[in-house]
Length: 322
Length: 318
Image 1 (cartoon, one colour):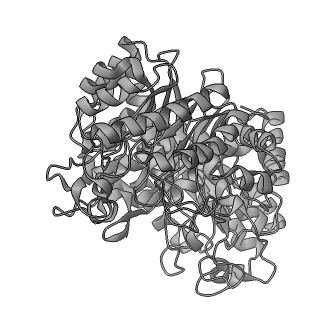
Image 2 (cartoon, helix red, strand yellow):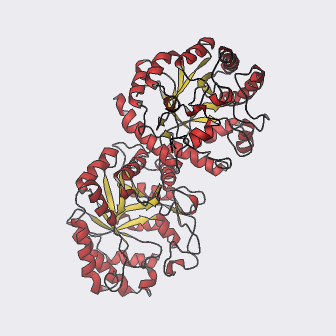
Image 3 (tube, rainbow over the protein chains, first blue to last red):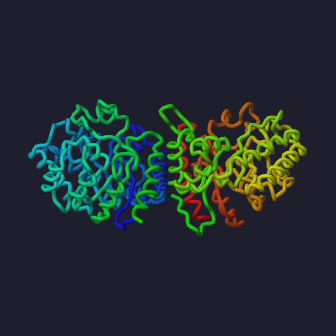
C-alpha cells in the first residue's frame, strides 16, 4: 500500500433525514462501525440545526464538553484522526440565518468566509487537514458559468484558502454532478485563478463520473492540484443533461430523471469507476493525501455499504499494491 | 477490523441469522449468489474467518454453487475459510424426535448421520444441537429424562467423530436442560470424549446461569462459543411460555444483542480472562439472533461486535 495515502470514511451516509443521527448513541455506533470496518479516520460534515450534534462546534461543545474531549472520545471509539470537513455554503443554515450562499455572488463572500471559518477552526482544533467545499451552486440556479462568476468564485475560495492556511489547513474544491461547473476547461480556468498553495481540488469519483468525466484522465490532467479524494462508485451517467432540471437535487438525484434511475451512488466496484486504474495513477503520480470513502444515498442498512467498501479496499485495492 | 495473525490463539466465526432487505422485503441471503456474496464480504471485511449456519442451508448452498466444495471455494475467495459449525435445526416432537424419549433416538441418530454425510466439503468442525426439547415439552425435567438425553448425544457424538465433527450441546434458555443443576447432571452423564459444551453466553444469563462459572466448570470439554449479550434475565417464567418462549415473550421483544451493548449483562471480559487462564485455543463464535427486532439490523450489530472484539476483548486475550 502506498505509504502516503491515508484512508478515512465519511459520515454523511448516516444522516438520512433531519432527525436521524441525532442521538448520541447513534453517533457512537456509527463511529464504532467505521472503526470496525478498518477506517480510523473520518470526514465530518458541516451541518446545521439542533438535530446535528456533531455538525457544529457549539453542538460538539454541548454534547462532548469541548473539541478536545470529542477528540479523546473518538480515540476511545477507534477513530484516531479527523481528516477533513465537508462544507457546502449553498445549504441553508439555521445558525447563520440564510437559505444558501452563492460563491458566484461577491455580496455573499463575507458570510461564506465567516461560516467557513467556524468549521475550519474546529477542524484545526481536531488536527484535521482539509476543508472540502462545494465551489459552485447547482447549474439550475444561475445557469452556466461566465468568466465573471468563475472569477467571483475564485476570489471567494482564495479568501477561504488564506483563512484555512493560517489555521494549518488547506481548502479543496469538490465539484459535484449538478455543479454549474461542467467542463475540464472551466476547471482549468478556475484553478488558474486560485492560489496554488492554498486552494486545491477534491475529486469525488462518483460525482465526476455522473457528470460525464473520465476520472482517471481528469486526474492525470489536474493531479498537481488534487489534494483530496472521495471514493464512491457511480451507477449511471447523466446522459440526458438533466443536471439542468429545475431543482435537479430532487428531479434528477432523488427521483432519477426521465430514466428513473433508482440509485446513483454505489459501493466501490459495483459501477463505472475504475478504482484500480485510478489508484495506480495516484501512486504513479505520488498522491499523498486522504481517500475518504463515501456511501451516501444508499439503501439501509447503512453498515452494509460500509462493510462492502471495507471488503473491496482490503481484497481488491490493497492487494493491487502488492 | 479484527486483524488475524498466525500467533493468535483465537479465530473468530460468525453465526449467521441474517436477512437481507430487498425490493421484495426481507429475504434470506441464500436466495442468490449475489446476496450470499454480499453477505460473505460484509462478514469477512470485519475480520471473521468462518461462518456458522443452520443445516437447512446445505441444500441451498448446493443449489447455488453446484456442490459444497464449490461453495467453500467461493467462500474462501471472499475471505471466509469454512462453515465452522452446523446448527442442527430440528423441531423436536415426542412422537418421532425428542431427546428425552428413548424410542425416538434411532430416528435422531439416523438424521444426524444424514447431515454428516450431506455436509462433506464445507470444512465443518462442529455439529451444534439443542440437547433437549422445549422446556414445556419436557417438563417435569426428571433425572431419567436427562439421562435419556445424555445417552442420545453420546451415541450421536460418537457417530459424528467418525466424520471429524464434534457434537456440541447448546442450551437455549427455554431448553429442557437449563438450570445449573440440570446442566451439571447432563455433563456428568455424558461422555467427555463425545459430547462437548457450546457456551452461548446470553442464553445462560437469561436462564439465570453464569456463563463464566459454567465455562470454568466445563472448560475441558468446551467446543466453542456463541458470544452474544442480553439485557434481560427471565424472571417470570417465559422459558415455559407456549407456544414460544423467545419471539413471543412478554418480557421483551428482543432478548439478544451484540456484545458490548450498553447495559448488557454478560461479563465478556471475565469470560475472556477465564478462557486465557484455561488456555482455550481455537474458534470463537459471535451471534446476535433477531438483531433486526425493534429497528436494529444485522450488519450494524455484526460490525459493533467486531469493534468490541478488536477494542475490548483482544486486549484481554487474543
